[in-house]
Amino acid sequence: MLFEEKIPEKLIRNDGLRLDGRKIDELRPIKFEVGVLSQADGSAYVEQGRNKIIAAVYGPRELHPKHLALQDRALLRCLYRMATFSVSERKSPAPSRREAELSTIITQALQPAIFLEYYPRTSIDVYIEIIEADGGTRCASINAASLALADAGIPLRDLVAACAVGKADGQIILDLNDLEDKYGEADMPMAMLYRRGDVTLLQMDGQFTIDEFNKALELGKTGISKIYQLQKETLRNKYLSIRDEVADESEVRIEISKEVEEDE
Image 1: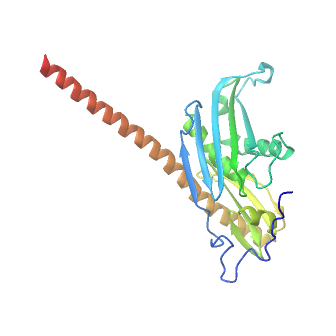
Image 2 (image 1 turned 90 degrees about the vertical axis):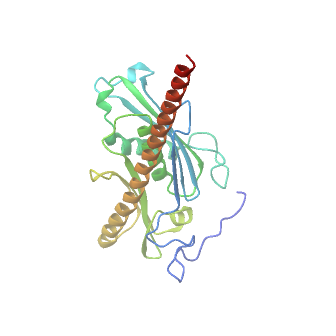
Image 3 (image 1 turned 45 degrees about the vertical axis):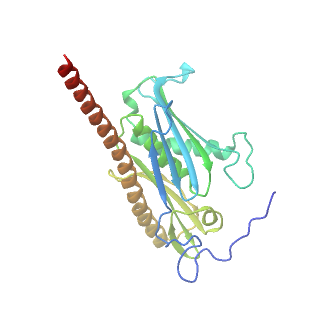
């Protein structure tokens, strides 16, 4: 081990703020971008706190090997991988059990959103690369993958938005960072089709009382609603910029046509 991580005595400071200066119900700074990879059918880049994640979508496309094909719907395959340099202690490049588990969890969280029945006997492949990890990567990965699917033009019932809630020093907190994830008392990642109100992911590590669970669930929904709005705004801005580019090109063509007519 290269160094020994210092375990914090408290995760909530005396002034009521967390160690990174956030309020207990405050999200980390979030940045979303779509269309970042030219060779993918759809792609997205997410920064959430110090998390940096890229998601790429390929498909629907012919499935190989063909014996995996489903006759009535597409096969959704998600691959979650962490770069060797994404964590403080270098990770082995070999796929880990945790990566395989999170690949399955992310697939299950996204499946309810996609009209898989539109594309029988095909595959939709989602590749997620964690460039830098700072806690809550499964939720940030779901946010990135959902944006990449929308960017690929794949029909969705709704975007999937995800966020984790937890407990630290007896208080319910939103959007856990790495220290809070490791040393907090509980962690509950959740994902939703927010407009429909459908929960597609709900896990829990640690213990909540019934009242704490209900409070955490409501706080998680609040965080998810903010992330959902950011996702929609990111997609809207992309297509508004495309519309403006098309309009500018049309104006240029009109001007050129006028000049040619005048020359004739």
